[in-house]
Length: 522
Image 1 (cartoon, rainbow, N blue to C red):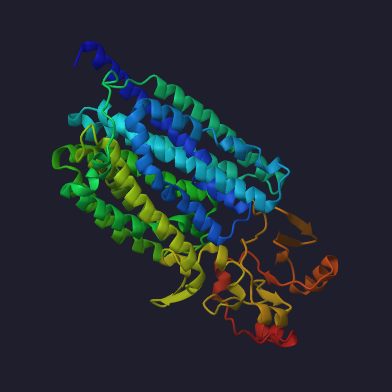
Image 2 (cartoon, helix red, strand yellow):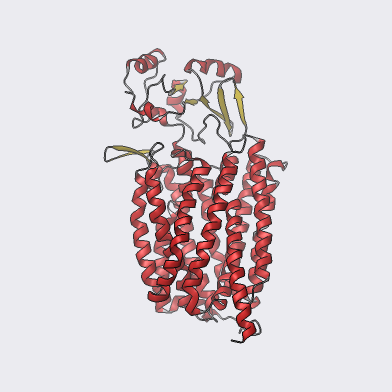
């Protein structure tokens, strides 16, 4: 390699680290907690939440066309265009709260933007990874990407924490829409910076014109034994992870009541551990290879999921253990998953190897993620386990938090006093006949819930024509609420239910008398 080429490569590697950090800020403002906030703000159903979570994986279907595009137009050029466009799509979300479109239309726009962004991201990632495979010397690959991952984890931590704090301090109604719009605009600004940094990076062998791709090139990852065995492993692992992928954020917010800031803190802790351990895993990759590291880390991660059986709203410390363990293992798993396709491919077929790995894993994850959304409808909301009552979504996934809210008053595993802790049902006959409808949990001071109106001391959520509420004060105000609304309503009435409420005997005299007076027999 000539001296000027070596200088260009060193400069490009430094630029790539900076670009990776800024790209994490893009993700913090446009995905993760932000996309969960958009889902809550627009009132997406559990099925749509599952679909939203599945989109990035279903988009892997375009991996083979993306590889063809990379091969024909070059990795650098393809990466610049696709990444540049995908990171400006949040501009459509920035104006979404003020568009003259009804709620179903707004939800459709959110899903369309997410789908388009996912498709372009697939093409961009294929081209970028192929580009980096040529740019980074083989002997330095593990150490370089280990160091890059560490800096990216720092950017992810800061970005997620900042976005989480902004979301948690958003005011209800228009204030929430303003915060989400500002996050989308910020994402676009950071996206423009990443494109500027990408443009300053070198493309090795840019003067070489690759031969026209053939069908044999596209099928080679499936015909080579080494690549095929790795593909089977990727599919199995992706399917196992995809069942619960979309429901972890919902479980943390709706069931564990962590809020966006604490959820960001949890993710930030994982990122911090990844930042510390990624360089160590990078050196391990250079010494023993990607396969042993990948198998060891995936085995550890499969065991660590059991930790999620134990956190409750008032017992969150198991998540600290999970953050440390997951951070260590995810650092190695991520680097090994990234390096393995590069190790088993050559320059000519690399885009197709990358496409095959990403498509196989992505499709498996997407199908499993959608299946998880359907599974949330049929699994029980509460399950007894070792003397404990667990919500279904702890079984990764089962019922999500969107389905759990509103049912606490008729679930035997949750114990409280009807009057002292504010748990009761208005219009019990109607409730018995129709059952509870699913809805986003409502609590005093909750944010990112649209169409709320305060009626005295009642918080009302109008969800698709069904009015659901939380009674802040005494139970007897149900009649006043019905008079104000001019109709009979189903309602689930809670207070914040501190831990002490769960210790109250549900068969206490006050509770039994209250239910007897109102004819509650369920």
